[in-house]
Length: 349
Image (cartoon, one colour):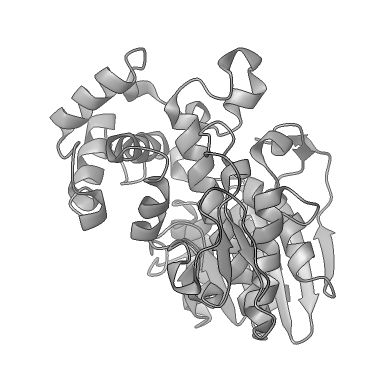
């Protein structure tokens, strides 16, 4: 294996690889990028994976992460780059690579919370599903809601993930979450942010998305803290709704957390507003780093599955597909990759 000495710590051994990367990457070395990571531009702070010449899959996946860390042509797009792009929604790409294939559906996040239980996107997902005939499904998030829904209409009320899980259950197609394990995501975030900041971000994201179902913002926050807050990796303040309110008053004194929207947590916000100097609060930094960790994991997972000959159907938010496309093209260089459903571009909604 080649020797690399990026960063003050140099390369680490295979057994010390970052925990948020899938097991397929156990045969690569990992080097931190020069400089200390910045919450306002975490793409440049990402680590670098170096391929092991004796391990084909690991080597291919390492190309993705090497480029992602160094910002080269075949890396995951940075948030700064993404903030300057426009693209259609949905954003769908098709991949044909030997016996494997991928239908990657970049969705608008839909569902009952948006007042559109039967969004036109539902029929688009169904149409792609019927034509593609997948052997493996990956859905965004860690929910299983929709799998046991009595009908497509009922599944659609919880969003595109519910639709996907309903179709997979109906046709007996194995379904997995495309997310890294939460403990590994938190482990990676702790290198940049305090546990209190991470938990406040998670709760606000849940409140803005109504992730626990109907109810007031207080209901959403309390249910999330009760459901997730006692996990070992999240043990610590805030643990109760009272703790959470104290944390938000101290960390975000200008924020009325009950009125927070998805847009307030937009990772591109700091880049779109020059006066914010990379992010109005730490929330944008956490959002970017969370997405970085997830994008790395998603790309590695999808590439490994396609190389194993699976016909993969995955549905995630449109921004993930747009940002991961260069890395997928870099890792699957011999594959035929096409963009489907070309439409008039719109700024990253």
